[in-house]
Image (cartoon, rainbow, N blue to C red):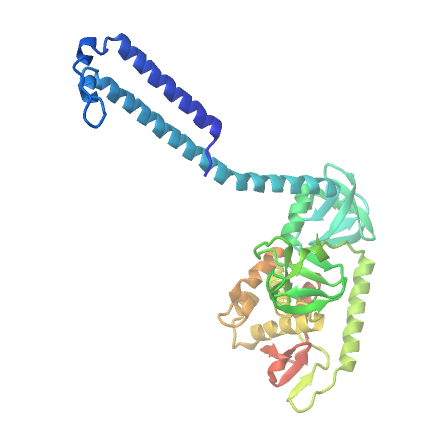
Length: 415
């Protein structure tokens, strides 16, 4: 550790001044050597004068006092040096962290100055005029971002996607608050800029390569992973891997508002897609597994908004990226258990039943709830609650690669 040199030099000078002052005072006080005594001072055979004889005439208490002051000053020097070293070692990290956060906030302040996020659990209506009775022209869903066109005391005019209209201020956040909200509730994604980017098991160029990906492919950033300079932690197939930061663009994944017409068109397109997939499904041979042959529709199940969100989070954890039909099938398994009488009779208790759903016990489900649920997962959960069941009544599922008999949808077999 290195002490502050100026502080130590100042203390050393002060110590010398005190020592000289003490010497001056004791000299003026009459503690001097008598000249006639020096005549009796003898030279010892070893060449050393009889210092003891001379010193006996001094005020030894003065010498002791001088030693005391010098010792005290040494201790003070050591204490100051220690204190200076402590500040030097402990403060930089805090200062650097604060500086980094301040710079990040300043950078985002300009970028997000005129941005708005809907602070809602489900969605916020966008109205034609700044009036609660005005016509609805669209929806801002959780995670959607808009541009502020005209701010008011109670209503703000926004533009998002193809939607332009007014939203109530009490359900929105703007500026840096919008940025903080997006960081908390939206995924951070890393999009590759080159073909053949290697995804590795660890943040090291010598680490094993999991796969190589094409330019434009995106990954969800693992925000909880420890940061390593030059690397970005990403989630792939449920596992945390790493890509070089030099070849990816990292950004927040925010959505855009949709008009009511766009919402209906999306629902119809999804239904057509499911119908096409159903037509292509065939029975597999030799394994006892069958491909999905379309959804069955049963009675709907009433659920609160919180239960529907919980179900959506579970289906995203279990089958995210496998398609809406597969996620709907996972949701149907939960609903089938609630109805069966052999399991708990509520969505919450079925999902959190001990030893049943991995994400519920591992903490992944809570993380998903905290970071937000995708629109496709919500769509799947809503379909399952409405009675859609691609599994034909299944109450369990596992990977299709297990060879278990059942209805195969995507990479999962339901039975």
